Amino acid sequence: MDYIERAVCDPTKCFLCDKTFTIGETEFIGKGIPHLINASKLKNDGKHELLRDVEVIQVHKACKINYLQKETPKIVSDKKSMENVTKIEEKKVMTDFDFKNNCILCGQPVNDQVDSRPFQLCTTTNLKDRIIEKALYKQDDYSRKIVDRIKDANLILIKAIYHEDCYTTLVQKSPTTRKKGRPEDKNIVLAFEKVCDYINESDERQFTLRELLERVQDNLPNEGTISMKTLKMKLQKKYGDGIVFATSFIKPSSIYFLDSGVKHREELRNEKKRKLR
Image 1 (cartoon, rainbow, N blue to C red):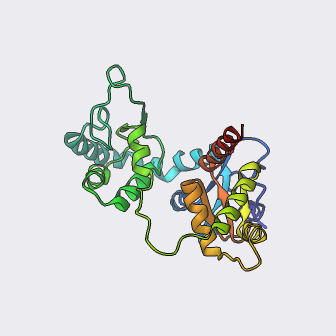
Image 2: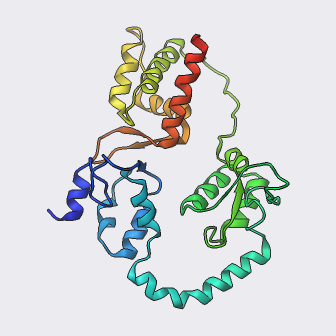
């Protein structure tokens, strides 16, 4: 068994460096797997072949950053030939919008001496994809302007910035009008909340959906029932983008809590403790 096979087959080790998770901060990558695949193809290390049917993978955070940003020999050799194209592209983008001084979302100037709103520099490779995904989902004039503004821009290269509250507003789900019809079963609501309490009190980052479904069923009356699909929908609504659903070689039919999901669990747990005082 070669290096790559060992890294993939052992879920206790980082897929990228093949070292255990006892040292260093880790994260689960779900939607970002296409970026790993592209980086692997550029590096020609064969890892992309093992990511074809994988929906989630665990890695060291530092390894992910180095893997996605570190230049391969091929990129270095091609860099000079791309410099002129890059400069032309940057000049074209900068004439249309001042990415270095204006928020890429609201379009307003960012001045830390005048504007007290916190802002961030675009430094992650998947930020642009996430912004466009959320903007396309909302389909309003504000969101369409964002897509037109950044779709052809290299946000990291041109050192683009954005207001933190603008980003939060964009990625938050729009409130939906509750459909009229049969009210939700109170027994299911209570049983689901008990399972959420179990999740929030746990230090685990991953759970099988079968285990959580059984816990809900255990807290329902004999005639009560809930489907796996309903459970997944309720979990997604409860924890939002902080969780990733996956069926993979690591653990079938599971949910994985990303760092944002773990933080949200802690907030929910603390909020409940305050209410009980």
